[in-house]
Image 1 (cartoon, rainbow, N blue to C red):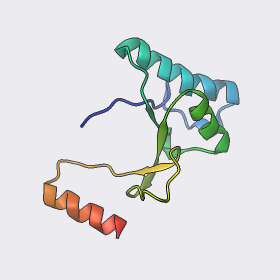
Image 2 (cartoon, rainbow, N blue to C red):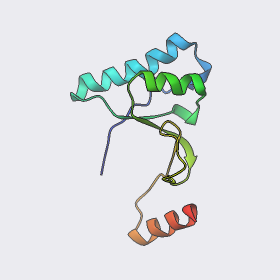
Image 3 (tube, helix red, strand yellow):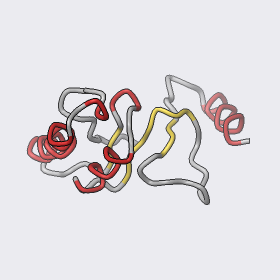
Image 4 (cartoon, rainbow, N blue to C red):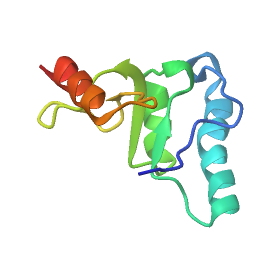
Length: 107
């Protein structure tokens, strides 16, 4: 499965920017993707994993359904925040390695 998501226009660490610039990075980047593909992306990845409550709120306001951090983990169904999801970067792995990695993280 492959998906295209938002990541800001310039990959700037968002909390370091004034709110109007953050809003442009987040919402403007989503609009650019929608213009190029015909669909607005549902997800967002915080550049450099940098976020704060204001940035999270701007991601929500921009219309994203979820966002991922740079925290390496699996999603625990009962204990997650849709705008602070962990992620697992997967390389050219065998099914066995993927299963072992998920079991080791989630266990």
